[in-house]
Image (tube, rainbow, N blue to C red):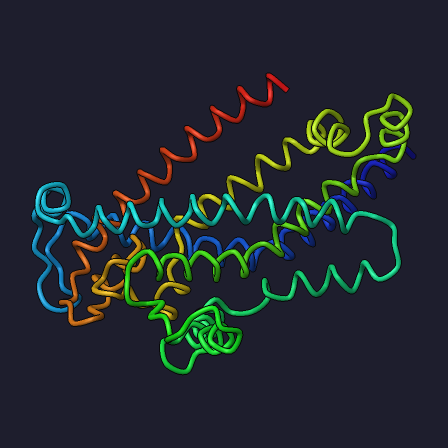
Length: 307
Protein backbone atom coordinates (compact mmCIF):
# COMPACT_ATOMS: atom_id res chain seq x y z
CA UNK A 1 0.00 0.00 0.00
CA UNK A 2 2.80 2.35 0.91
CA UNK A 3 4.73 1.38 -2.21
CA UNK A 4 1.71 2.20 -4.38
CA UNK A 5 1.28 5.54 -2.63
CA UNK A 6 4.97 6.38 -3.12
CA UNK A 7 4.68 5.50 -6.80
CA UNK A 8 1.71 7.83 -7.24
CA UNK A 9 3.54 10.60 -5.36
CA UNK A 10 6.67 10.21 -7.49
CA UNK A 11 4.56 10.29 -10.67
CA UNK A 12 2.83 13.45 -9.52
CA UNK A 13 6.15 15.11 -8.64
CA UNK A 14 7.57 14.14 -12.05
CA UNK A 15 4.57 15.75 -13.74
CA UNK A 16 4.96 18.91 -11.66
CA UNK A 17 8.66 19.12 -12.49
CA UNK A 18 7.95 18.70 -16.21
CA UNK A 19 5.33 21.44 -16.04
CA UNK A 20 7.72 23.77 -14.21
CA UNK A 21 10.47 23.11 -16.78
CA UNK A 22 8.09 23.88 -19.67
CA UNK A 23 7.00 27.12 -18.03
CA UNK A 24 10.52 28.45 -17.47
CA UNK A 25 11.96 27.10 -20.75
CA UNK A 26 11.02 30.12 -22.93
CA UNK A 27 12.58 32.54 -20.45
CA UNK A 28 15.66 30.37 -20.05
CA UNK A 29 16.16 30.04 -23.82
CA UNK A 30 15.68 33.77 -24.32
CA UNK A 31 18.12 34.51 -21.51
CA UNK A 32 20.79 32.35 -23.17
CA UNK A 33 20.17 33.80 -26.65
CA UNK A 34 20.14 37.45 -25.60
CA UNK A 35 22.66 37.35 -22.75
CA UNK A 36 25.29 34.64 -23.16
CA UNK A 37 25.42 34.45 -26.95
CA UNK A 38 26.27 38.17 -27.28
CA UNK A 39 28.96 37.75 -24.60
CA UNK A 40 30.56 34.94 -26.60
CA UNK A 41 30.27 37.08 -29.74
CA UNK A 42 32.07 39.99 -28.06
CA UNK A 43 34.79 37.76 -26.64
CA UNK A 44 35.33 36.35 -30.11
CA UNK A 45 35.93 39.71 -31.81
CA UNK A 46 37.46 41.78 -28.99
CA UNK A 47 40.97 40.71 -29.99
CA UNK A 48 40.50 41.21 -33.73
CA UNK A 49 40.40 43.92 -36.35
CA UNK A 50 36.99 43.27 -37.85
CA UNK A 51 34.74 45.72 -39.66
CA UNK A 52 31.69 43.52 -39.97
CA UNK A 53 32.55 42.32 -43.47
CA UNK A 54 35.46 40.54 -45.04
CA UNK A 55 38.43 39.01 -43.28
CA UNK A 56 38.79 38.97 -39.51
CA UNK A 57 42.39 39.74 -38.53
CA UNK A 58 43.61 38.75 -35.06
CA UNK A 59 45.44 41.69 -33.44
CA UNK A 60 45.88 40.50 -29.85
CA UNK A 61 45.68 43.34 -27.33
CA UNK A 62 46.05 46.10 -29.94
CA UNK A 63 42.45 47.25 -29.41
CA UNK A 64 42.98 47.59 -25.67
CA UNK A 65 46.22 49.51 -26.21
CA UNK A 66 44.29 51.87 -28.47
CA UNK A 67 41.65 52.38 -25.76
CA UNK A 68 44.24 53.24 -23.12
CA UNK A 69 46.62 55.36 -25.19
CA UNK A 70 44.87 56.75 -28.26
CA UNK A 71 41.18 57.18 -27.52
CA UNK A 72 40.50 59.99 -25.03
CA UNK A 73 36.91 60.24 -26.32
CA UNK A 74 36.14 56.82 -24.84
CA UNK A 75 37.30 57.89 -21.39
CA UNK A 76 35.40 61.16 -21.67
CA UNK A 77 32.23 59.26 -22.56
CA UNK A 78 32.81 56.99 -19.56
CA UNK A 79 33.22 60.03 -17.29
CA UNK A 80 30.04 61.52 -18.74
CA UNK A 81 28.17 58.32 -17.91
CA UNK A 82 29.35 58.46 -14.28
CA UNK A 83 28.52 62.17 -13.99
CA UNK A 84 25.05 61.69 -15.44
CA UNK A 85 24.39 58.67 -13.21
CA UNK A 86 25.54 60.46 -10.04
CA UNK A 87 23.57 63.62 -10.78
CA UNK A 88 20.31 61.93 -11.65
CA UNK A 89 20.41 59.35 -8.85
CA UNK A 90 20.97 62.10 -6.28
CA UNK A 91 17.49 63.34 -7.26
CA UNK A 92 15.76 60.18 -8.47
CA UNK A 93 16.22 57.90 -5.45
CA UNK A 94 15.22 60.42 -2.71
CA UNK A 95 12.26 61.52 -4.86
CA UNK A 96 11.08 57.95 -5.39
CA UNK A 97 11.45 57.12 -1.69
CA UNK A 98 9.64 60.29 -0.58
CA UNK A 99 6.73 59.63 -2.96
CA UNK A 100 6.53 56.02 -1.79
CA UNK A 101 6.27 57.15 1.84
CA UNK A 102 3.53 59.63 0.95
CA UNK A 103 1.58 57.16 -1.20
CA UNK A 104 1.80 54.44 1.46
CA UNK A 105 -0.85 56.24 3.48
CA UNK A 106 -4.35 54.81 3.52
CA UNK A 107 -6.25 57.70 1.98
CA UNK A 108 -8.81 58.00 -0.80
CA UNK A 109 -7.38 58.66 -4.24
CA UNK A 110 -3.93 57.20 -3.56
CA UNK A 111 -4.32 54.55 -6.28
CA UNK A 112 -4.86 57.30 -8.85
CA UNK A 113 -1.61 59.03 -7.89
CA UNK A 114 0.28 55.73 -7.84
CA UNK A 115 -0.77 55.01 -11.42
CA UNK A 116 -0.09 58.60 -12.51
CA UNK A 117 3.42 58.68 -11.09
CA UNK A 118 4.21 55.26 -12.56
CA UNK A 119 3.08 56.09 -16.12
CA UNK A 120 6.44 57.51 -17.36
CA UNK A 121 8.06 54.14 -16.63
CA UNK A 122 5.97 52.43 -19.33
CA UNK A 123 6.84 54.97 -22.04
CA UNK A 124 9.67 54.11 -24.41
CA UNK A 125 12.97 55.86 -23.65
CA UNK A 126 13.16 56.94 -27.31
CA UNK A 127 9.79 58.66 -27.04
CA UNK A 128 10.83 60.37 -23.80
CA UNK A 129 14.04 61.60 -25.45
CA UNK A 130 12.08 63.06 -28.36
CA UNK A 131 9.58 64.70 -26.00
CA UNK A 132 12.29 66.46 -24.02
CA UNK A 133 14.19 67.48 -27.15
CA UNK A 134 11.01 69.18 -28.38
CA UNK A 135 10.17 70.70 -25.00
CA UNK A 136 13.59 72.33 -24.71
CA UNK A 137 14.01 73.22 -28.39
CA UNK A 138 15.80 76.55 -28.85
CA UNK A 139 13.33 78.42 -31.08
CA UNK A 140 9.88 76.89 -30.70
CA UNK A 141 10.21 74.84 -27.51
CA UNK A 142 7.47 74.96 -24.90
CA UNK A 143 9.86 75.65 -22.02
CA UNK A 144 11.36 78.72 -23.69
CA UNK A 145 7.87 79.91 -24.60
CA UNK A 146 6.64 79.61 -21.01
CA UNK A 147 9.70 81.34 -19.56
CA UNK A 148 9.38 84.20 -22.05
CA UNK A 149 5.65 84.57 -21.43
CA UNK A 150 6.17 85.14 -17.69
CA UNK A 151 9.14 87.44 -18.24
CA UNK A 152 11.83 85.17 -16.79
CA UNK A 153 13.97 85.34 -19.93
CA UNK A 154 14.08 87.92 -22.71
CA UNK A 155 15.25 85.63 -25.52
CA UNK A 156 15.18 81.86 -26.06
CA UNK A 157 17.83 79.76 -24.31
CA UNK A 158 19.83 77.33 -26.42
CA UNK A 159 19.45 74.41 -24.03
CA UNK A 160 21.47 72.05 -26.21
CA UNK A 161 24.17 74.59 -27.07
CA UNK A 162 26.52 73.71 -24.20
CA UNK A 163 27.50 70.45 -22.57
CA UNK A 164 26.21 71.13 -19.07
CA UNK A 165 22.84 72.45 -20.17
CA UNK A 166 22.36 69.41 -22.39
CA UNK A 167 23.48 67.09 -19.58
CA UNK A 168 21.00 68.82 -17.29
CA UNK A 169 18.17 68.08 -19.74
CA UNK A 170 19.28 64.45 -20.01
CA UNK A 171 19.26 64.18 -16.23
CA UNK A 172 15.73 65.58 -15.98
CA UNK A 173 14.49 63.23 -18.71
CA UNK A 174 16.09 60.19 -17.08
CA UNK A 175 14.70 61.05 -13.64
CA UNK A 176 11.22 61.48 -15.12
CA UNK A 177 11.51 58.12 -16.85
CA UNK A 178 12.77 56.05 -13.91
CA UNK A 179 11.51 57.51 -10.63
CA UNK A 180 8.13 55.78 -11.04
CA UNK A 181 9.47 52.22 -11.13
CA UNK A 182 11.73 52.87 -8.13
CA UNK A 183 8.78 54.40 -6.30
CA UNK A 184 6.80 51.19 -6.84
CA UNK A 185 9.68 49.09 -5.50
CA UNK A 186 9.95 51.26 -2.38
CA UNK A 187 6.18 51.16 -1.95
CA UNK A 188 6.19 47.36 -2.06
CA UNK A 189 8.92 47.32 0.60
CA UNK A 190 6.97 49.72 2.83
CA UNK A 191 3.77 47.73 2.50
CA UNK A 192 5.58 44.57 3.59
CA UNK A 193 6.25 46.14 7.01
CA UNK A 194 3.72 44.82 9.57
CA UNK A 195 1.36 47.33 11.14
CA UNK A 196 2.49 46.23 14.60
CA UNK A 197 5.90 47.78 13.97
CA UNK A 198 4.31 51.16 13.22
CA UNK A 199 2.19 50.88 16.36
CA UNK A 200 5.20 50.05 18.55
CA UNK A 201 7.18 52.92 17.07
CA UNK A 202 4.28 55.29 17.74
CA UNK A 203 4.06 54.17 21.36
CA UNK A 204 7.80 54.75 21.80
CA UNK A 205 7.50 58.22 20.31
CA UNK A 206 9.39 57.36 17.11
CA UNK A 207 7.15 59.14 14.62
CA UNK A 208 7.69 61.35 11.58
CA UNK A 209 11.25 61.70 10.31
CA UNK A 210 12.71 60.14 13.46
CA UNK A 211 10.52 57.07 13.10
CA UNK A 212 11.46 56.72 9.44
CA UNK A 213 15.24 56.75 9.97
CA UNK A 214 15.28 54.68 13.19
CA UNK A 215 12.48 52.20 12.52
CA UNK A 216 11.34 52.02 8.90
CA UNK A 217 14.58 52.55 6.99
CA UNK A 218 16.54 49.78 8.78
CA UNK A 219 13.75 47.34 7.84
CA UNK A 220 13.75 48.24 4.15
CA UNK A 221 17.56 48.61 3.98
CA UNK A 222 18.10 45.32 2.04
CA UNK A 223 15.49 46.35 -0.53
CA UNK A 224 17.00 49.84 -0.71
CA UNK A 225 20.40 48.28 -1.39
CA UNK A 226 19.05 46.24 -4.31
CA UNK A 227 17.06 49.12 -5.79
CA UNK A 228 20.03 51.46 -5.66
CA UNK A 229 22.34 48.87 -7.23
CA UNK A 230 19.96 48.28 -10.15
CA UNK A 231 19.53 52.05 -10.56
CA UNK A 232 23.30 52.65 -10.60
CA UNK A 233 24.03 49.95 -13.19
CA UNK A 234 21.04 50.99 -15.31
CA UNK A 235 22.11 54.64 -15.22
CA UNK A 236 25.64 53.78 -16.32
CA UNK A 237 24.22 51.78 -19.24
CA UNK A 238 21.95 54.58 -20.49
CA UNK A 239 21.95 54.73 -24.29
CA UNK A 240 18.66 55.13 -26.19
CA UNK A 241 17.56 58.19 -24.21
CA UNK A 242 20.80 60.02 -25.05
CA UNK A 243 20.64 59.10 -28.73
CA UNK A 244 17.04 60.25 -29.14
CA UNK A 245 17.46 63.45 -27.10
CA UNK A 246 20.91 64.89 -27.89
CA UNK A 247 22.68 62.23 -29.98
CA UNK A 248 25.89 63.28 -28.22
CA UNK A 249 25.59 66.94 -29.17
CA UNK A 250 26.93 69.56 -28.94
CA UNK A 251 30.07 68.31 -30.60
CA UNK A 252 29.93 64.89 -28.96
CA UNK A 253 30.31 66.37 -25.46
CA UNK A 254 27.22 64.55 -24.12
CA UNK A 255 28.30 61.20 -25.50
CA UNK A 256 28.08 58.45 -22.88
CA UNK A 257 29.98 55.20 -23.03
CA UNK A 258 27.12 53.09 -24.39
CA UNK A 259 26.30 55.51 -27.21
CA UNK A 260 30.00 55.72 -28.05
CA UNK A 261 30.25 51.92 -28.30
CA UNK A 262 26.98 51.71 -30.25
CA UNK A 263 28.13 54.21 -32.87
CA UNK A 264 31.47 52.44 -33.27
CA UNK A 265 29.78 49.05 -33.58
CA UNK A 266 27.24 50.10 -36.22
CA UNK A 267 29.19 52.91 -37.88
CA UNK A 268 26.82 55.73 -36.91
CA UNK A 269 27.49 59.50 -37.03
CA UNK A 270 30.03 59.18 -39.83
CA UNK A 271 32.19 56.58 -38.11
CA UNK A 272 33.58 53.44 -39.64
CA UNK A 273 32.11 50.09 -38.60
CA UNK A 274 34.58 48.69 -36.06
CA UNK A 275 33.09 45.54 -34.58
CA UNK A 276 36.38 44.39 -33.06
CA UNK A 277 37.19 47.71 -31.42
CA UNK A 278 33.62 48.16 -30.16
CA UNK A 279 33.78 44.67 -28.63
CA UNK A 280 36.98 45.63 -26.81
CA UNK A 281 35.34 48.77 -25.44
CA UNK A 282 32.39 46.67 -24.30
CA UNK A 283 34.71 44.42 -22.30
CA UNK A 284 36.46 47.37 -20.69
CA UNK A 285 33.10 48.92 -19.80
CA UNK A 286 31.92 45.59 -18.35
CA UNK A 287 35.01 45.50 -16.13
CA UNK A 288 34.22 48.99 -14.82
CA UNK A 289 30.61 48.02 -14.14
CA UNK A 290 31.78 44.94 -12.24
CA UNK A 291 34.16 47.08 -10.19
CA UNK A 292 31.38 49.54 -9.35
CA UNK A 293 29.09 46.67 -8.34
CA UNK A 294 31.69 45.01 -6.09
CA UNK A 295 32.66 48.29 -4.41
CA UNK A 296 29.03 49.20 -3.89
CA UNK A 297 28.11 45.82 -2.37
CA UNK A 298 31.06 45.89 0.02
CA UNK A 299 30.36 49.48 1.06
CA UNK A 300 26.66 48.98 1.63
CA UNK A 301 27.29 45.74 3.51
CA UNK A 302 29.36 47.69 6.07
CA UNK A 303 26.68 50.37 6.26
CA UNK A 304 23.97 47.73 6.87
CA UNK A 305 26.04 46.26 9.69
CA UNK A 306 26.28 49.71 11.25
CA UNK A 307 22.52 50.09 11.03
